[in-house]
Length: 286
Image (cartoon, rainbow, N blue to C red; front, side, top):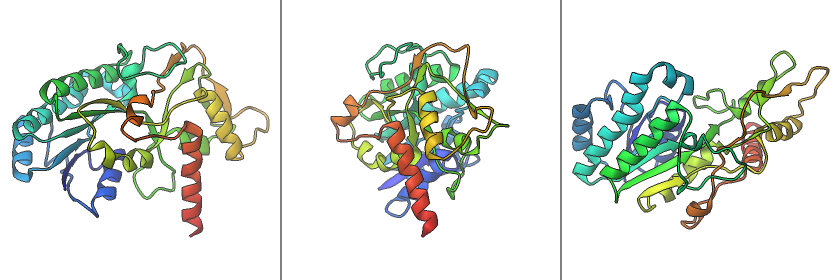
C-alpha cells in the first residue's frame, strides 16, 4: 500500500511514518516539498505519487497560537485540509483526517460525547477542525474518514520527538513546579501508540466521523492524583498537584460506541497510562 503522510515530522506523523514504513511504501513530504495551502503543490504531489490513502496529520494544534495567528491557522487547518480533499476527490483517493476532541469544547456535562452530538466548540482551533471535517465530507462523502483525537502523550524516553504532555508534566512535577488540573473536567488522554496501532483498521472504516481515543471515567484532577501515586511522587509540604480554579465544568470525553461497532477500541485513561509506563520500563530493562 502507498501512503502519503502529511506532517511527517510532527509528534503524530513521525510515529505513523515509522510504524508503517516497514510494510508499506510511505511518502512524507516536508513543508518545503508540500505546502498544503498551495493547491497546485497538492495536485503535483498527489498526481505524481498516486497514493492509496492520504493520512493528513499536518496542523497548527497549539490552541493559543491559533487564536493569535488566525489567518495562518485557518489557512493550514481549514484551507490546507480542503485542498488535499479536493485533489483526493479528483483522484478518488480515501483521506484520513486527524480532527480533535476540541470540537466538543462546549459540552458542560460529565457525559461522553457522541459523534452525532451538535458541536459548538469554544476555541478557534476546535471551530477550524469542525469546519475542516464538514468540508472534507462534503467533498469526499464516500472516502473521507475524520478521526477525532484526544490529548495524546508519550513517555519522555521515546526516541521520537515528544512535546510536553499529560504524562511528562506529571513526571517532571515537583514542589517548585506543581501541576494544575481541573476537578470539573472529563477528557480522554491517549497514548499515541494506541492511536497508531488502531490506524490500520481505521483505513477500512466507512466514510464519516469517529471518536478515536481513550475515554475518561474520572476527572483530569483525579487521574493526575492516581498517576502521581503510581509514579511515587511524594508531597513534602506544598502539594505538587493543585486544582485549576475559575474554570467551568466540561466534558471532552468521547463515546466509544460507534467505533466499537467496527471492532476498534481504546483503553480507559488510567489503563493506557499504565500500559505506556510498563512498555518503557520493560524496554529500558532490556
